[in-house]
Image 1: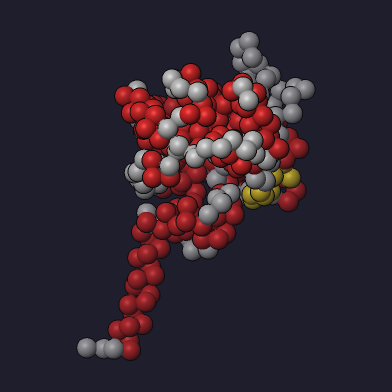
Image 2 (image 1 turned 120 degrees about the horizontal axis):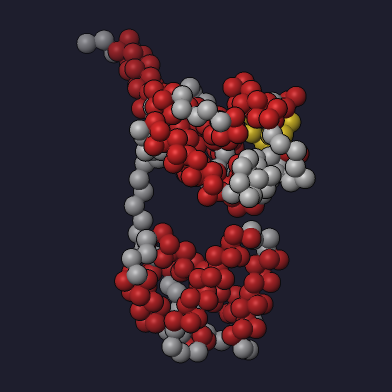
Length: 292
């Protein structure tokens, strides 16, 4: 089988598995890079060649997480060739080749930092976008993809369609997040676009706002407030605040759209207020039973 045909068939295979457009794009891009780089025919690639490719990526100063994404894509392609195309070979991408990743704790904003940031957000659209991240835990991509039909204001909720991992979920609107949305809808220009958040000036006025444009707005307000803040930190802040308010981990997992509870448990390491309360509550009982 020609390599071009194999890659086309692999793409069709991923589409049948309902992989997202982003996954398809990333897998095809990394696979193209590998196929162009490797010297021997794709079915003759050895583990030694894969190790040399890892060294090549390291020399380009790619992050370990990015390199692991390359390896996932290439390993998946060889699994496809072996299991679906019946190519007689051993997968050259061994599991042990995955690079170890640092696991930094989620960075969140303290209450005074949240107030400081939102004090400088004076645009109704921007305030609504960032309130959805802070109160509902939406990712920046989910905010950009949000449609008018996803809003259910009478029930104070909205639907997140095709979130990370192509998962749908329902999130609920706090009073201030709902008010921010209502304020924005009052000034939102008429547009045939189905997306909720639109560009409000320039040549692209009336078009859906992009992920990068939302991030640039956050960078603008962060500079204005004299802070270093990212959109994702608002999501981390929401999770930490809920945990400190004694919300169950499973509830937070559902709201954030995490596939694994282990991902949500990382917030326990930074949620010191809850740990402190649990400790004092438990140790008080211990002292009552075992007074010295």
